Picture 1 (cartoon, rainbow, N blue to C red):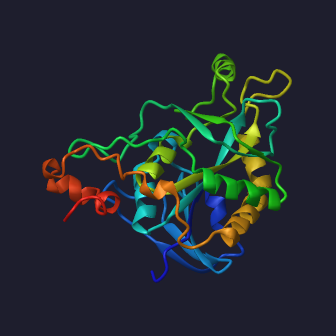
Picture 2 (picture 1 turned 45 degrees about the vertical axis):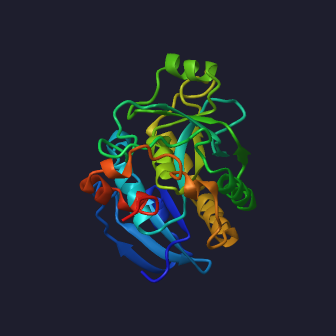
Length: 289
């Protein structure tokens, strides 16, 4: 591949059908953490290369807990993708974030319990900073792109990630509201944390599909409700991505691209060859050969 993609997009398989995408190639990658959820589709959009990945597989057959988040993010790292936009369906925990609206959250709470959360396992220890888990710069660009596309956009809010695949009970939903959460979803964690470990900027375009189950004057969330709203928002999401790509500059620097600079704790001499080889894409610029 002659030119690295300027942007990676993780979303539903519907985004594969992007009319403005040209010069498309399909990449079947294998990472040290296994095979990504789907082949990565790389094409040209507004004169720049972009890469698409279907988080739940083509046809949506992988549940949230079983998504290979590490393989997905590592595959983008192998392609030298500098920034990722996640497109996901979320429930609203606020009256003003209505179904059909799009939110660019700025905080995360992780309530998952069964997922591999880090690339760094026994053999190489790193403690990454995720005080601000979403890239501020990319989130600003994304918010502007959604507004330009005509979507009703909100900037900010805390997204809580639950394990799934079930939806919440009313008691849980009201508890999250009492905690001050704004949105609820099933995929942002550990995706955002892994992107930071991979030194890739990461932002989320959260499509509000429902009011979860807390809203007494609205029907509880159903799969049909989620699918219907996402289908209605597909055109807006595609227009927003195109707007975003048009405004991105090649080689734009960000603090996210140096997130591991002071995070690796293991002494270089204590790192096993196998750990060094497995994480080469992430750590090679920090470890002498």
